[in-house]
Length: 264
Ligand SMILES: C[S@@+](CC[C@H](N)C(=O)[O-])C[C@H]1O[C@@H](n2cnc3c(N)ncnc32)[C@H](O)[C@@H]1O
Image (cartoon, rainbow, N blue to C red):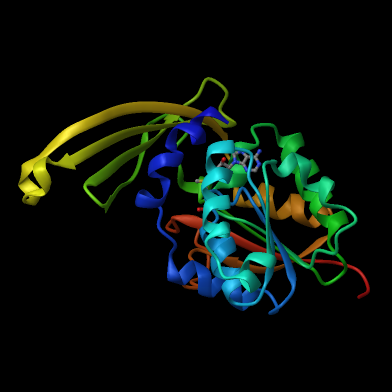
């Protein structure tokens, strides 16, 4: 998990919690229930949902990311802290949560694409199905891979963020991989500091780093078919956390909501 260990320090500057995402998650799950946040990063959404009354278990394989999540949890008031658990583990270990009663699972931020084998994705979804009771909800958000070209680089919007005396800029590109089922995710991170804390023009470069990891392309048809084959009924297909419908040609992301089939 080296890639995210390296990005952890600047993650919250570049990916602060988004209120639309929080509201979308809150509206899809029932208050007070036990949710699992798979690949929950530094815990922003798990913390937000615990504030709303949910019990949340965060699974995150990067030790540097979970360390940051633990710090946020430690700073919470007792009642919220008691509702949150953090485990350094990946989707592949979701079965370790048994026999806990889990009512909903979400996996957002393109996390599922980090499972680079189709069989690993299928197993993760099958394990999620067996963890959830009938009626339990899974929500998965990945990039819209239907519109990402196989043979050319694809640039994602550059991210910027600032905190204290530091500003961070992240350029993100998807580059073709030799296996067309995969894509190389390349980031260039630039960290600047305000020299002596003066004006914005007065910054100097502190660090410039480039990192790369491999992701699996997850076409919408593959994700919906796998969910259905593993015992879910599709209940929502969105192109954004504002609830807009998914459009394979135009949407930036794909969010699939599905319900564990069977009698409740
Ligand atoms: C772009 S971040 C998204 C974090 C968080 N879900 C969010 O939306 O802010 C992707 C996360 O996936 C995690 N990840 C990578 N491989 C994973 C795996 N096999 N299982 C679960 N999470 C994984 C990374 O460590 C990283 O925290």
